[in-house]
Image (cartoon, rainbow, N blue to C red):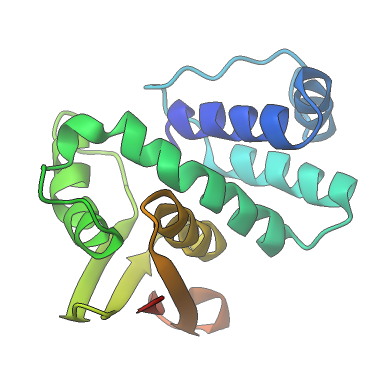
Length: 183
């Protein structure tokens, strides 16, 4: 996983869960140096971010999936800001951003690193109010995706009702999310 996601996780912990000291404690609890730096374009083992999130879940006494979803809701808006150059002007709603992200953004970002294995994200827009999002990754971080969808909706002022209809954790080959815009 690219270091940029670790940077977002660090921001999230500092802003929402107690500051720098909490971040250093989580790094240490996950088996890393308390002052480890993650560089945005460097690739790190997926297990490292899961270990940090697991330490956070333990410290917060919350299920890991809830921590990951909350992180996703934080990171969704940050992803829009970070990857803004790759988002076309007409991609100003959640459905079009998700539909565009899976193909074009990941293709552009990983064109120079063919060994990268970004998550597969796609969307079927059924009508202006309904979408099915598809997510597939060895990481199985579907809780983060659910949070990203929620966070994007909040950022863009779109109320969303999100239901995960199938999950890789239950043996499915991909996770599917039915997303409905609500007023």
